[in-house]
Image 1 (cartoon, helix red, strand yellow):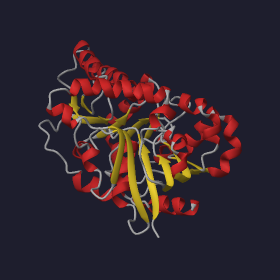
Image 2: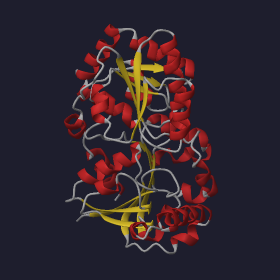
Image 3: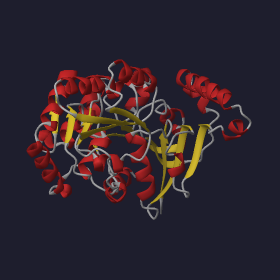
Length: 381
């Protein structure tokens, strides 16, 4: 008999958790699981990637009709106000959600969706909270503080890294007695998809090293300090180009910063697009984030065997084997500067990391399949 599973998430914008969820939805065993998805707000670049056999529920739809009528700005206002109402009165808003019963309800990424585990609990035999962030830093930790009894009643806590688990316990020491319910499952990646799309791009200037960064353009990714580091390195004679892929609320600010620092000829905001050809072409991949839990893009760069420089955020040390597979830097502008300068000016070091990554693909902490997830879920039943 199939286990009926409902995954719950805020939206499907271009983040690592959302990409991981799509991978799980594609590859989870249909003979063992009957899977559905509840999206709080049905929008995001990964909406078209939801497998056709997955039943999708949502609280706030995609606004297609209003877009056709030229009223999409009004829909966005409705969605924004609805999200504010949901955060403040989740029990009230949840009364309008109509779903059948499931064996397991899973809040797949900590966020606004978490209260749905509690407000819809009559529909679930078991509940899972899947933490994809460092709750010492995440603004969403206030949701758990609002519902301490409901949080303590969750049947299983899954964390994407040991660092994320440690951060949870540090932030909520009152839940330390629940450690028997806590597990670490590293995000699985689609190795074949990454490699098949990781076809090197033709570059017009192969004499200059290219640094690539990927992520949502928000404050947490540290792209502002990365652009300052880029400018400093150029001033110090370290010739290179910087390409940043992604979109987000900081786009205009970053554009202005590029103009102010006069680095428009060497620094490009490339928007959101398939990152794999850019990663495959990069001489160096850099993660400049202030905070993460398990940076998926670092794992993707590892699959493509690119030399990596990463701030020592949660999960990065686990992925990179505490420096075995890439340079871990202090989480500061000077740290990013020192790490990038070291990697860019040492071709032997870059070659060393490429070879180390290439020969250890079967030893990474993350895998390509979802078997571990399946087994953990079935054990709950």
